[in-house]
Length: 87
Image 1 (spheres, rainbow, N blue to C red):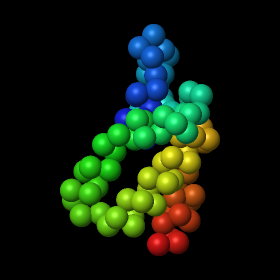
Image 2 (cartoon, rainbow, N blue to C red; image 1 turned 30 degrees about the vertical axis):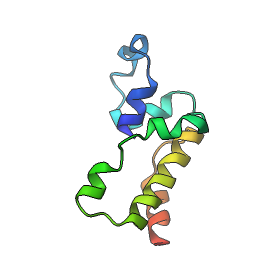
Image 3 (cartoon, helix red, strand yellow; image 1 turned 180 degrees about the vertical axis):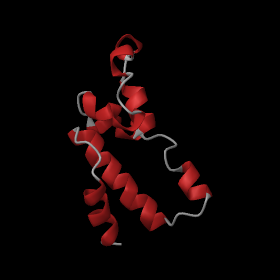
Image 4 (tube, rainbow, N blue to C red; image 1 turned 30 degrees about the horizontal axis):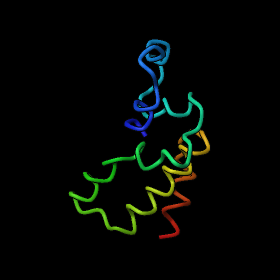
């Protein structure tokens, strides 16, 4: 979420978002167009895959991240727990 948020913010607006935690920046911008989700999440799952996260877990996390970015909703721990409980 941090990487995707940073990719969405033009340099001219980064100053006013300095007080926002990096992983929440995306929620302070317009939602990501669905056609741009692959770009927004490029390489996001390389490290989890490298350290042994299962494909099923990475797929669930990717779907959750895409939903957040496309909707503009902020991360919610309870929502993520519900998503992961389905695995």
